[in-house]
Image 1 (cartoon, helix red, strand yellow):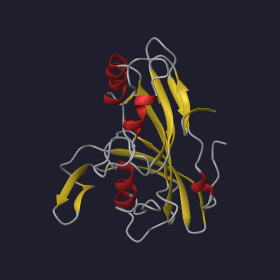
Image 2 (image 1 turned 90 degrees about the horizontal axis):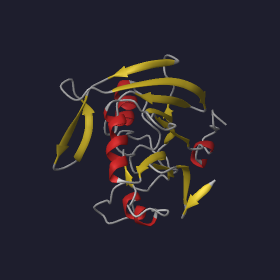
Image 3 (image 1 turned 120 degrees about the vertical axis):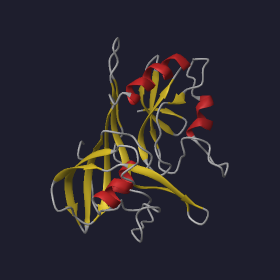
Length: 224
């Protein structure tokens, strides 16, 4: 596997890079001044003069596939695929408990709520933005379940809120929406694969292997 520094490079061509973003690394520079993908990308030109820029976002504690455009023109073109809902994404999440069904569709609009005491968070809001997540049970063991998630929309914290509030099964290790459902290994949400179609080139397609923290809870890679 190719590497750029300590980051695995999953895909590379003239338009885009796909990296396996590690848990704990923010995409944009955090207010606390800690490390980020954007800060590191200045060293990822790989022979190009322009600095690669993320087309979409993953939460700081979500690992997995992240696409960066290698030019302003490519960023504009590839961003349209996201805006038009043409990008296929697969996530895996470990949740506490077991669902009543083996698969389902969560159609729950989301909005942003903020207060001086608690800061901001995303909440179910019937007047909010349309948000849809499809889910499938992969395996259950030891009081946990591994779910495969294919979102139709890409709202902030969508998967985390949909599982906690829509399914009643918070993601293990989610410090905001998981309540007492903590885990010292971190949040169990992983962007396992992504596919972005292009008109004149092969699809941008990549798969990020399951991180070790999933295996620590007894779940191997369903695609491996």
